[in-house]
Amino acid sequence: MRFEAYRFGDFRFEPASGAVTDGSGRSFELRGKACSLLTYLIENRDRTVSKDKLLAAIWRGRVVEDQAVFQVVSELRHAFAGLETIRTHRGKGYRWVAATYVTGGSRCARAPMRPAGMRLAISVLLTLTAALVAASSHLEGSTASTRTVQIDSLLLNEARSHAIAGRLEAAEAVLRIALSSKPEHAEANLELGSVLLATGKTEAARHRAYGVYERSADGSRERAESALLLSRILASEGRHDQADRFGALAVVLASKLEDIVLVAASQEQIASLSEARGMWDAADANLLVAQQIYAAHCPENASRVSRIRERLARQRDAA
Image 1 (spheres, rainbow, N blue to C red):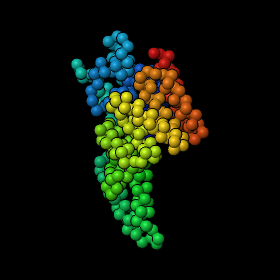
Image 2 (spheres, one colour):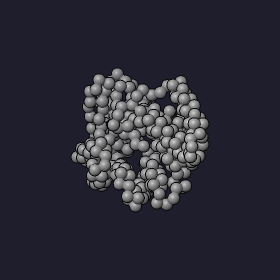
Image 3 (cartoon, one colour):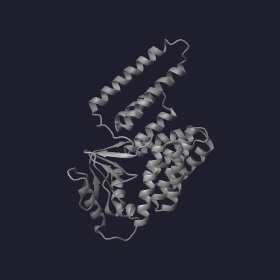
Image 4 (tube, rainbow, N blue to C red):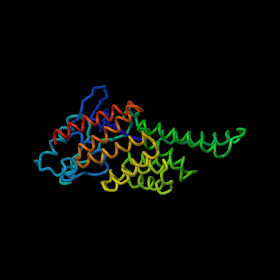
């Protein structure tokens, strides 16, 4: 499960391309440091980020004027005029305060589900699950394992639908229902780990991913997918050396499995790690591999990766 866009107020922002769309359908593009700083603040929206940390993360130690951060923050505030997005905490730094929801890059999120609505949805799902169990027990020739797989599939699909639409609390709740009867279900744990990562609960996400990694057989798809998720989680926590190791392992395992789409996703992650270090050429080389794979198997992703490469080229020229 990949999350490629953020929705706040009437705006939708794609970090990979810098594209922003407002409620009227008008689009514009954030470039360079504005795109990077916005992404960083949103990804760290659970805390106040100091100016020094922003300078280290976005300008990577380059000597710049003290007003550099202020100027970019002002640019972002102007871009999202009418919505409080970035709050200044004097002497401490900046914090992203707009209510933000994660959604897929290819479609807009619906409005977040309110608590009452989420409880109703979960109640309906529980009733549906119980009905399925009862009905499936009367199916001639059906085994218990087949019934379980059918129910797991329904819950997982429901959770994915919620996540794609940006209803992450509902997705998390449904996945926990699925895991209540099968706590070691690899796919459900990986899905839950992705949702937890998207909501900033990295420690809980890491626990889920490590559990799948440790329980899975060497060379299995579960081992490859958990390694990829661990790389993303560790990178979000700033543990770049560990993220590198798991990212490289994901590429190797996906290659052995001959799962070329998983290879492409792993190459994207390696590119992201290279970009974080300012290694533009290495990042572009990995993205080119991913783009070529997607072109044959997932054209929509190929277009997305192409936009990422264009953004990287601009950043490299500006660096």
